[in-house]
Image 1 (cartoon, rainbow, N blue to C red):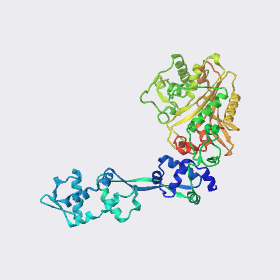
Image 2 (spheres, rainbow, N blue to C red):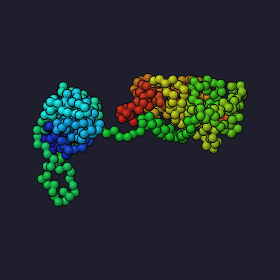
Image 3 (cartoon, rainbow, N blue to C red):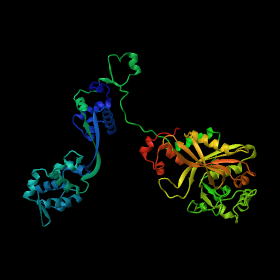
Length: 504
């Protein structure tokens, strides 16, 4: 961009900073010289950097600043110098010294003795010839305090390092700390720009109604605006990408006419396992797979009628099935767990469903918990989505149709199904979808029709219930091309800013 065009488009803050760039390259010096606030100077520098006028560089440096006593000594003089001045007038005892604070006396005497500047004889202090010579010139320490702070440790000369070591061992004279310094390096364009006469009073920032009314805008020079210039990116607030994906999936379900099922994350084993015909001695109900609630280990069972129906299905089976046999245990059914799937919500929904409400379609989408070892593909908590269709006329073909339609809306045009086994569905299938980018089949979960041992106790008779429940985190990982499931929740701020919204 031509220098004249840049000048015509300069903001007032830039116009105030540019003259200072002729003299200084350090950020703190630019603040002092321009008379602007630090945020105003930084804003101007960022705009100039966008225009290729300069480069902003940040380097970590060890800096020296004056502390409380250092600022005081800069005005009054070092205490040892003031002591020498008193002793030059007359010998004095420690108690007769007037210009020093009590704690300064001992420090000053020690420092002057090291330099052979004073003598102590029978409680009287006197100045030596060496001390008189020290009065005639400024010490390294005095000269150091008069420097323009902050100072960089790396830039000190030998005599300045000597003064630094002497002063920093004393109380609150100097502060030495590491800090990030901002410095400016002009580009060739910037060097050309600062040689121009850049002033702010000749340029008008905006056209006001008053100027239009009285015609004072005529023959005035207005600031030139460059709408194509690169500006710093603003990262606005937004929902976490996992929450965006969950909301999208819920909308897919509702578009298909499903109603949402919700419920607490803590469930009794009755609803989480027993109502779904999971045997009471099944390994999945042990501690290696399930989280139990230590503070409230037991919950309440529902009314006796449904408990007895589930108990009978386990001990004796239903309509010709054999059940699991053995003896039903009420106390085991009361055990509270963190839900291991959202299918427990399906069981509760079927139990509360009235005959006149059928046919009906429901979905759930929520957090589940399993005692998994943490690695790239497993978390101990995960999102599962769940769908059921309750319809006396439903069949297996309807189930496959629902699955194809659901996954089509999730972005997968092709779906295939393989025979499988699940504890509470028969027949059962595994669901695969064809990934259009990777050109391969991905396994996404299971589906089937609830067994009579599930539906008869809950609904009162055998009614077909189509059900499917894929893990949803796998879909999220695939969409965002995330290889490690832990990245879904590590809250990397750069990832959260750049990742796109879920929109199939």
